[in-house]
Amino acid sequence: MTPDVDLTLPIPGPHRVRDALLSLDSGLFVFAAERKWPGAGPVLPRLSRSANHGMLWIAVATAMAAGRTPRARRAAARGMASLGLASLTINTVGKRSVRRPRPGIDPVPLARRLKRQPITTSFPSGHAASAAAFATGVALESPGWGAVVAPVALSVAMSRVYTGVHFPSDVLAGAALGTGAAFAVRALVPPPVRTPPAAGPAREAAALADGAGLVLVADSDAGGTDLVAEVREALPAAEIVVCPPWEMRTALEKAAARARVLGVCGDDGTVSAAASAALRHGLPLAVLPGAAPGGFARDLGLTTVGDLAGAVRRGEATRVDVGRFRSGAREGVFLDGCGIGVHPDLVRERGRWSEWVGEWPAGMLAALRVLKAGHRPMTARVNGHERPLWLLTAGNGAHQRTGLAAGRRLDLADGLLDVQVVHGGRNPSWRLLAASAAGRLPRSPVHAAVRTDRLRLSDVEPGTLLAHDGEVTEVSGEVVLDKLPAALTVYRPRATDGSRG
Image 1 (cartoon, rainbow, N blue to C red):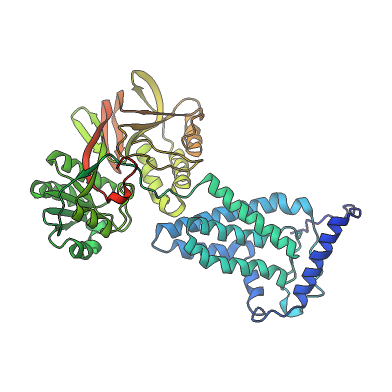
Image 2 (image 1 turned 90 degrees about the horizontal axis):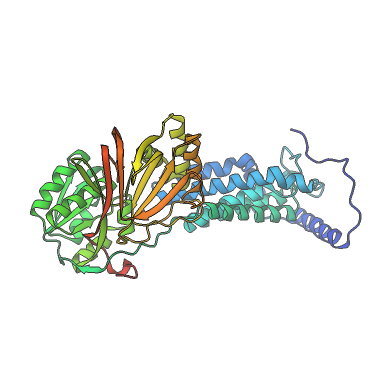
């Protein structure tokens, strides 16, 4: 490593305001060097060294990501993304723009000094920028974790003055830059909006005071086994069936034949299968959120057993749309969305990463992996026009996009399919990546979006895969996507209803 201080640069002439600020800065540095800091001697130098190259924050992020909560993992990912942007800005612009020499360390006691003195320029402080960026990024996603990380970040920033390697103004400027980097990352990838979307008109359903008449089928792999005791306490007369994933469809059909209310606990595909059974038997559906609530449960505002139990006891329900696909003799429904082309591969890959890094970064990783796999666009006629397609997706209801992040569903009963298309054409594989980066920006040249109540595809090649709510089936020939408006009654606490409820 070579120093990035160019000693051949001409010394600037006198400037009253600048010279006064530099004099104040130097005075504060000397004051801090001469002051005794109780308890800091054995701690701050080691803490300062541990933050070299971001190693301290990598360790903290790893510990957070090792936890069981998706929010902690998202906070860790946001903190590291903010740190990365801050470090990039510091190393490419910050230190090479000002080229301020390090302070003289003569006033600093020998015991405080670092064993290896840094030789890069002093302004701004990279350690302070990284600390502030990581702590702010974490706090923007999870205030609780932010409160834990903030004292450590503050100590790292203070250690740079304590050990004599930075002026106070270097630390303040670095902290400001790091905080700005965290907010810039949030602007690009906003945190998920947790306000439940609007639903259809409120509807009274069977009020089961003790749960009698409710048959709940729970997937043992989705936390159903662990939730049985809570359900029995809240709804003691409910019948509960716990089974492995491969028995869920059969168990749901049997339960629907004898239930007044069909209940389900499982992943999105399982909930979709329960919705199909409930529609065939004319039953209301009760969705129990599992250990990690699926998208439909979150959209209903259901996060705990108590949320659902209260709605069942009071008979609070609403009507929601159901999406439907048909291809020859095959027919199925979806509550979240469906897609063809490389969509099944993208869904699988995105699912591996989304809880760790968030929806938009996971989408980018998925797109890169699909590109690497060497897929080719499919060809189909969309509403009568032949199109080369990388993928086509249809969401059950209109979604909102903010910046580059995946958006939330606006309404559970709007009668619309939110159709997104990534075209083929020249360099089609990179079109997929560009569209993943652009989200649903309407001016993307490789991406098209439309909201409609019906879509028809024809000349679909045999063996084409269609993914719907995490499940995959083969389609060919003509594929029709449409809506069953307000077809399904689901229990939902009245307090979470939208403006129409």
